[in-house]
Length: 169
Image (cartoon, rainbow, N blue to C red; front, side):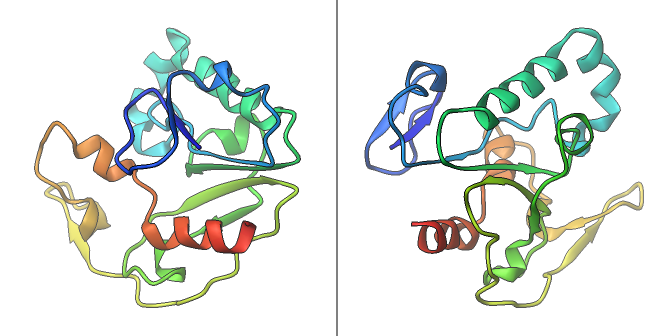
């Protein structure tokens, strides 16, 4: 079952609401993708404001709640960010190019009761885009402004999701 505050993009069992409403059920495994908005280093220039108004601490508390859930097998997925320094370092960092996508996106995994993912189809790292300020970003990340840009950028690459399903189930 998937659980999100948003409706699902994929047909199947889905609970639209707060995970805290269903977290105490008897689950075999949880693969959680907590919002990275207040945690990821890509938003580091806003950290001072997020710390001052409590957004970052609330996000960290939520991650800790997920990590402490009474579930034997847990994976928490998030990009490089403050979870590593404020809670603990990830057990593994994977890249889409380890699983068939010619792209980079450092994806951290905090694991409980689950093995490390094993790369299945290592390919090239993909093209880069240099911004006007000289910053080098993955080409897939260079999207025009849109209402869904945040959602597209935050998605887990399908190859990583497929490997989570095949190697952990």
